[in-house]
Image 1 (spheres, protein in one colour):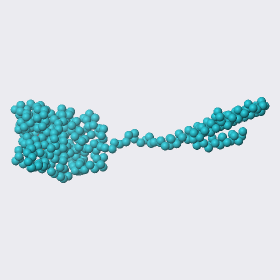
Image 2 (tube, helix red, strand yellow; image 1 turned 120 degrees about the vertical axis):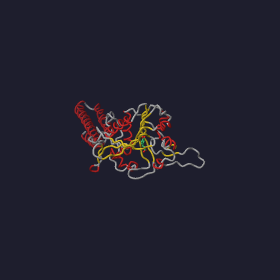
Image 3 (cartoon, rainbow, N blue to C red; image 1 turned 90 degrees about the vertical axis):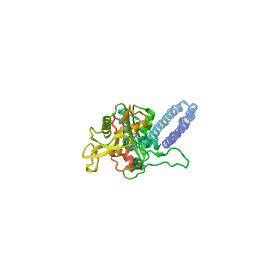
Image 4 (tube, rainbow, N blue to C red; image 1 turned 180 degrees about the vertical axis):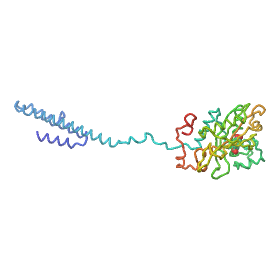
Length: 357
Ligand code: DAH
């Protein structure tokens, strides 16, 4: 009996998993196990012998069962420990990984500009980047001989011999969208057109492709005063300051009369730009009252309607607001630059939640 007991207790102690433990249980105290067989032998014994052997066998069965239970609990504990070690994680880590991509400053600024003008009732219009020279020049009162054509460093599309379609250009500004929008929507209207434009030019502040936003408001009684108010509201909202001084400088554009270039008060003290203070002026846009010929070209009767227009460099105002020193970096696709200057993808710019926060 003692041998039997020792044999099973040793096996139980050595068992490495629950399956082994179960086979030991069957062999020892199962219905056909060794202890059960011994119990069956009790029947052949004399009553005196049975009185001795019976309790001993029962005690043996109990002892093996409790050794099995204890070992089973031990194995379960060890398994849990191992799993917990395996599944350990640092709960002080941020709950969500940083998004991989960022929003490019030009996209961000386009969204900011759109949000501000939307608040003033302007909708967004678009036009093709490859356009005819009529939309890009003639319709905007820039005839073939006009020096503005030469100044713009225009990219002309190649024409195969015998191709008689009108000449096409990569649009040199967003102004042709004025004409396309007039044709489409008629008067009155209020639109902005953000988008890419092209000129053959390349240095620290010029790239062959860059971005502008055009503005156009047409109604019966639109004046320069409206233009001035709209631009002031825009500049305050965009630079997120309470007040700014704007300077309207008489200028000339073929498509507006009168025309004004708009400068914004700023300081360059210590090499960093501050908008709204100081004694320097920085040009940010061209503007004016839409020329009657331009209204006519867009199919709008200048006898009844008038309006203002403006054109602004998106890249330029992005550089100013976010302190980007070199325009060319916008188009390098350098991920380190994008991580530094980019914006979180889930923050939609809006006037109420903050434009750039
Ligand atoms: N199209 C001009 C340019 O690219 C900018 C401009 C000036 C647009 C005056 C306008 C405007 O709508 O009224 O330089």
